[in-house]
Length: 548
Image (spheres, rainbow, N blue to C red):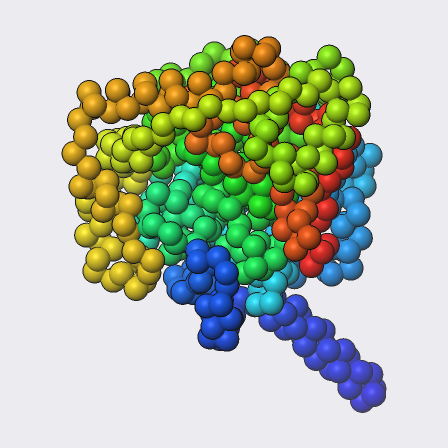
């Protein structure tokens, strides 16, 4: 009898210790970053001479509290068994796994929660990509499982997605990475979030970004925010830039922390991080997707857009976000189906322009040659010299008026800040914490006295010049013009052309590089068709080796 009791006691102690190990194994702990920061001082890229890595305000243990009991039940063995079903799989494949019973929406969601915690709690692998998690997401996933019926393979139903943290959600604050917005609890979702929920998507959480969408400090690191700390690139932590401002969106998708993520772009903020993290990013024409409930820079140029691991998912994501928004003056009625039973894997009959000056890039030139060999008619373009004067002024004056409008109409009513000047004054009270790299661009907004009438002239001049640069789209009857990364994002932005970025390879250093398709306004479907054909031809994307 005594032996039985001793055995029982020992077993209980063992189980207790095992549970304690499970609880502490993935604890988020602050670490000494002195040596890492010292090493950064020698980085050849001035923007990557970091002042800090870790957030000084975010406690990820608090973020994970709502999931503690569920995660205790989820083992590393279950995680490893699910990896081949989930990692790098497109949405149609995931939906087929759910349909045949090998996966559920709940398992898919807890897999991502476990994976994020596994990597982000490891100081040698953490990417500082997550700012918040939806505390209700597992409950919502179980509801999706209980209510699923004839779910299309091309549906966002039950798919966990992440949002850039300048997009309003009811469950989580919307901070734009800024301490001034730390308690910005909006009463309603952004319009695109309402559409995502209506189409069955699961909002998994919020991701880090370049603070105030990188229109805040000058020459500062991409992917830094006072709330989230320094976002890092999974292909080279602290070695390669993350791109910005949708840094967390690109990083999280690349690391397989969700099915997909939403980014926002004013000029390059989707194309840049998509390129740097080897993911597919679409910056739609202004008006295709609503901006209501998104912290703005410019009502002239801002747009959200999908960031995914592949083109099919990008199109499915677009379908789930689109819709006419009467509260967005630029919103358009769009009847386009961005994916309908997939895409044709063909370049047949396509005429595509390439910029002659970019042909000196060996990876660009190699991919152009691959396309030429499968029948693409390549038209070489020598772009004209243009003037780009006034671009920063456009952003300054739009932000001066658009931020107060957002704060008045879409933000938490208890916020003490009402405009750019209030943010500047707030940050001055503790600049080491709130603005360690300065706030030069915000100060520039305050100084800029350009009138609305003068601004309209600037906008028109920029549009005219940019259209001149891309005139071959019309004059040569091109399906698209090919660029690299975000090289021509500003030009595409002010002339209202959509861009699609697709991975095309890696430099000898291992840094990702992407091909960017610049298309005609409102021809997103055509860009996605081209991007799909290119993706299938090259299959360039590879998972980051330390995140497999």
